[in-house]
Image (cartoon, rainbow, N blue to C red; front, side, top):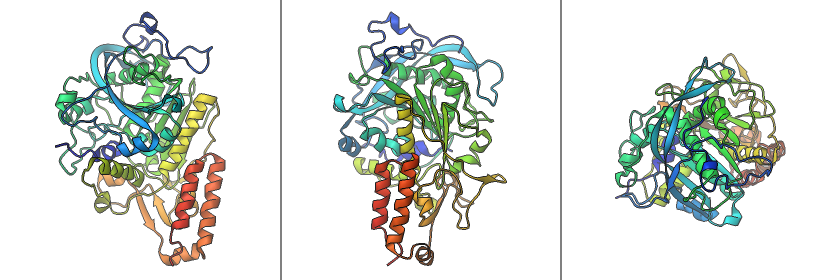
Length: 507
């Protein structure tokens, strides 16, 4: 019997080079730079990155599907197919050369090489004409010791309705081989299992030499997309732009990749750094999962970077506030009011997975109380669209106001709603206090999910004397957020429709 998979996305999101990469140059391989970039005068990036051997699509196994497979209902809704592939190659480890300064201008050098075999999961349009030419590559989150795809879970509607392809990479050792999770979690059915334990028949021959090799493995995953060999992970689609993304612990990996590895690999066209903390992840084994110290995005970039931060991320264990920096021509930072590090939206994606695979539920509300129902997913989808346009068309996203901070805390209005930051209907036309700060005394997992405190009937009647007043307030806020570039029209319309159906003020 298959073990229920519904827990996997939740588990993933609950996060508390002088020498080139090994392998022959693609020019030495038959096919060479087969993929054409959008600019005919610009060579395909990443020519010095090692080229892995690709096998697949992978089938079989006792579970009958990939680990954290996409819900079939989503594939059917958007006309997508999902396939899994194995990557074999020799990966380079990196070590810092000199101090890893706060300015992010890091230099890393090669520190040995080792063979590896890992997997990637690919989600692409079933019809080639539906592909928009952009591939988003997610560094799968392993905070709980297994792979999770939180960025896909939150942003899949925008990725798939526009026709982008998605690749999830098992870049780190713990999700392949097992070991001590950064955030051990017991869930219904027992503790989550790494790939080789979850399905030995399917994944038994995978081999990961250690996290010091994870950065080059992630580069080589992009190489498999850009320069396919006999086995093409995109099924013949032409990738014109490849964008990296990672959330929470993977956001810390993104920062270290941008600051240290990108200047050597130069294979990604842009980066979404989602819910990172104050510092970057280590280049060797061990270290704090959310990053150590303070590090900013280097200011001599040659590709765009968009940082996306929730209220939870500014202080506490993450501590992004200490790494704040000014926007530049190639850096934008969005801080979003009313959001938490993890929230109801990721649980909703989890529930859809549960329905598709017939698994049991995981009632986080009974464990933590009322959790955050804020607009992270909607604004993240706008961020994905903005980053895609930045990479493809050179159109920079809007600059966003930061959350207001005073005395080491977010400034809040008389009701407890954060001031500043990106504003959307849930905070501009509120029916509850949405916060990234969980009530004290909860577990580590609950601290990441913030809180929702609904207004009572008297407060709602005071704010919105009539239902039309409420709908008008939501509509005005939604339209303003669309005009500012922080909401997509589809999501704004959905928020207005939800307001129209809501019993506000109570009848």
